[in-house]
Length: 451
Ligand code: ARG
Image (tube, rainbow, N blue to C red; front, side, top):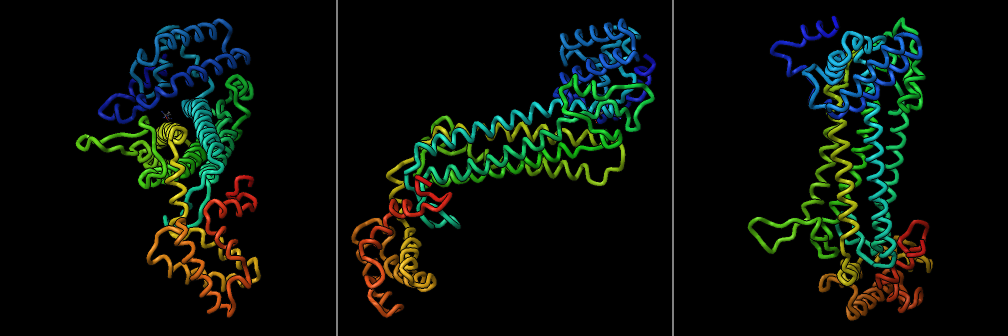
């Protein structure tokens, strides 16, 4: 009880609100109750408190839980408030709960306990997105679409190949989150303020009761480090960056009429009733900025902190909560938008031939016939330039003919021989076709449906 009185004495004054982490701590209310219970069970097992004392504290914790976070008394943080409430319910014996520990190991344990759940939710969101992408990719394994570099039409690919390019990237984000999870899932409890305790605590036992995979062994490291927050937030920022690319693509593709977002993931204008805007995807895109700022906020708060515990750490934690919430939500929204969007096969096929995007295939064909690739590149460039002036797409047959003639002239000029001395005119005509072009690129991981 005297501990509680001392705390009251030091938490008054004009800085009271400034000191308090109560608002952010609602997130670790359940975690703190779990940590308190595990600690008390261990204290009883070790004979540090007796069975009746432990029982009284555990009943008080049940009452605190039943009353809920909002019923807690005022306090500097949730740890202090719960302890005050326990003393309120159990009397002086409640003051034994904090034997052989500090808020420093307590808070570090609570954050890890709660974060495990959040990381698993984020992982689940990545799995949902990957499932959407894979399912739509499966439906569109053969749907030809334009592929871009520098946002210019480059080479035809398929919607399946395109979507799986993101599925594979998100798979690595899933793996990074699992990797971070393994290091989050370690217990700092029993480190006390930083320098251990003379009580015969059993750290393995509390770790086991709380479902941790082991200890953060060094007691000074255990209370000081927030590197596990950095790892998680970095993985989330990476994930959000991946997904922002997908969001941006879908914004651009819907602008080109290649894909239509479902109404559920679109918004309209308050003044222009005809508008259908990709607002949800724009917010998904923006989340990458929030995640990067979360990572930056975390690192700059942690940089240069001396050993061991410093109150700065209290301000580090919310960066992780905000980032994990924002990114998990954005990933779920991206999954829904991707699953419900409608790809326009005809518009995609037309666009796939735009900008002479099959020209690389013609150069490949010439190179396969023994023409040095650099010369083939020159021939194709010259022919494309000549024909492109008047036409946009190679898909029309008259353009194809004009292109073949131009290529013939380029062969005479650059190779000193007719085109058909190297390749059949029909083979070149086929290579100019977007679908044939895709089918021919069956190298491992390439867009040909089998690959
Ligand atoms: N609320 C604090 C935090 O989030 C934990 C309290 C440790 N306080 C202290 N003065 N040692 O980090």
